[in-house]
Length: 100
Image 1: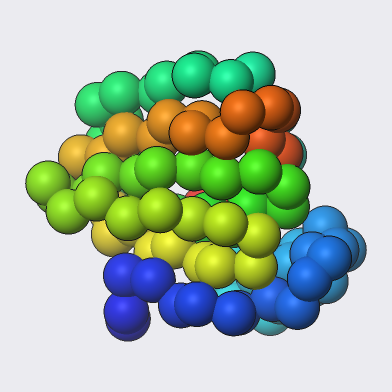
Image 2 (image 1 turned 90 degrees about the vertical axis):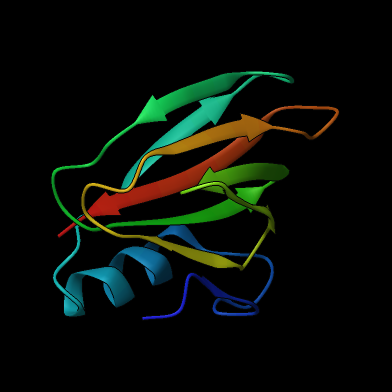
């Protein structure tokens, strides 16, 4: 599976559409809301993870590869991959994540 799929979901991104797509693929779907500059560092998922932004922008580092995510872009994080997420938007970023 590719690390990043650009344009996976049309804008404006609808949470229900993402949840439906992910459910078909065996993933759950949860919401996170981060203030500007919020960072989550050094996470290691025990299962595969998907991430997509509803509003705002994230910078994600997965196994030392850094990517910027904006609305509609999907990120795949493999099980056991060390990763970090940072809100690089000037405002609140709303994003979804899910595990298989």
